[in-house]
Image 1: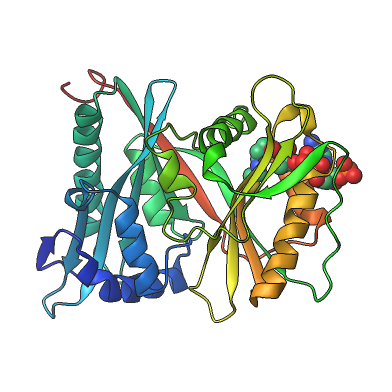
Image 2: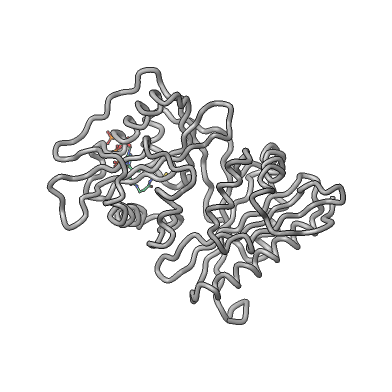
Amino acid sequence: MRIAGWSRATPAEAPPLAALFQRAEAVAPVDMEQRAEDVRNRLATLGPDGAGRTRVGRDDTDTVVAYGEVADMGTAGDVLRIRLTKVFHPDIADDVRAELHHWLIDQAKQLRVDRGSAQAVLGTRCAENDPTGRELLIRDGFALVRHERHLVLTVPDAPPAPVLPPGLVLTPVDERYDELARLAHNEAYADNPAAVRPDQRTWPQHATGHPRFLPDLSCLMLAEAHQGDNPVAAFLYALAHGSTDTPTAILHCLGTRAPWRRSGLATAMISRVLHRARAAGIRQLRLQVTDSNDPALALYRKLGFVESGRGFAVLMRQLTPGADEQP
Ligand SMILES: CC(C)(COP(=O)(O)OP(=O)(O)OC[C@H]1O[C@@H](n2cnc3c(N)ncnc32)[C@H](O)[C@@H]1OP(=O)(O)O)[C@@H](O)C(=O)NCCC(=O)NCCS
């Protein structure tokens, strides 16, 4: 299968893109959106200048058979993080895959220059059962950095009540704590080299400004007599999933700052989610977790989460001026 023409993605193309994602996901899952509404939201999170960094390929019957996207995931320690996404119809020709890959790399180089970043790191997903895609990436200097597991939990009929340690309160996500929550997030994920640590510019799209943000299920854990300036001891941000027949919520990011760990905070926040999910008719929770994140895997296992079989690999590559491009 070949491409008759490429164009930028527009919101109007969300339905054919969702159809492509469904087709691709059935063969090589990387947890792409399955509904037009969710694809539209995905395009919206790319920001006002994001459309230029998308590419939609159609075959000679005008069917959408390929999609590429370059997304700015924020800057951490002066390094810009860029996510590359490629989705293909299962019958696409190998040279189309390679062509789109090289287009994405060129767009990523341009994004790094536009953002004025000295260095960028490129990250991309590859289905566990896609050796062709993985070989292409490895030939181009990408290295396998981790496997992401995909876990699910059926919301129980009678979830356990949240138990809070003394001096801590659970509160809905409140805009007054937005910046403190961002700092708490980045501190909690500081030891995780794979984690996105959003800056002030990209935090909204990661958290409350995400188009599928679920305020009722998200929460902060505040320490009443807190150490230092930041009372946010733990946080949980949930998103609507919506792409399945079963009403589902995603635990998008969740963390406890180091001084408060192993005190039951994450367990309490997830209990709160389960109660609220139950009341809202949500039947299932889903999340992704890196397979090397033993504390988180232990937490989720203890709470009854199980693997869905939709995990994928993550590969990364540096993009440094001079090494492989002109600044
Ligand atoms: C994973 C994380 C959220 C756990 O938060 P927490 O508030 O410490 O978790 P809890 O106190 O509720 O722990 C509940 C259970 O999880 C398991 N667990 C949590 N941390 C663990 C660890 N470091 N080692 C082994 N088991 C652990 C234990 O079974 C624990 O029960 P126990 O203390 O009675 O043995 C926290 O370590 C963290 O913020 N990590 C960095 C961010 C992150 O990785 N988030 C998850 C992304 S998917």
